[in-house]
Length: 152
Image (tube, rainbow, N blue to C red; front, side, top):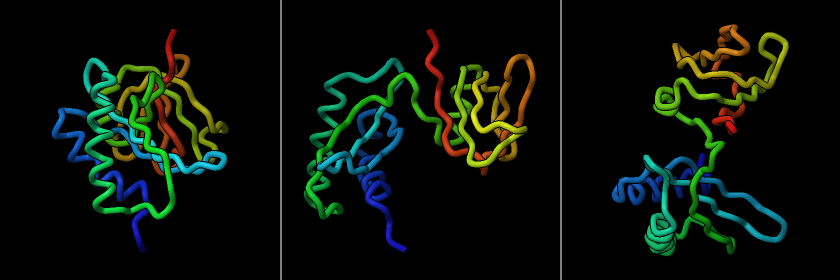
């Protein structure tokens, strides 16, 4: 099976981000209206700057021109993942322990598919969160999306 555009771009963008001391958070490739949009999300401790985005964009454009993994015309956007950044890998769950998160599941867990609670950790394929003083275990294989909750 061939790789998706997002997977190919992830492989190209990761070394670029790492060489600049940045974390590659995610890559999305979606059709929006008439346009195809390639979004690359980067981050670092203390947040990213416009210069970080410009440098990664410039370097990635060069790699994309050489490898040419995208047949259609597209727009490249490089930005921060935002306040509600997705949690993708085990390191994210460790790093953001103690923070408020939102979880959406494919199938109901304890009768619900949406959860907001404090992340307690990740253990043996289950996300531990505290919701209204009660600890819940949510199997990772039932999770559609996990992201930081925006706190005001």
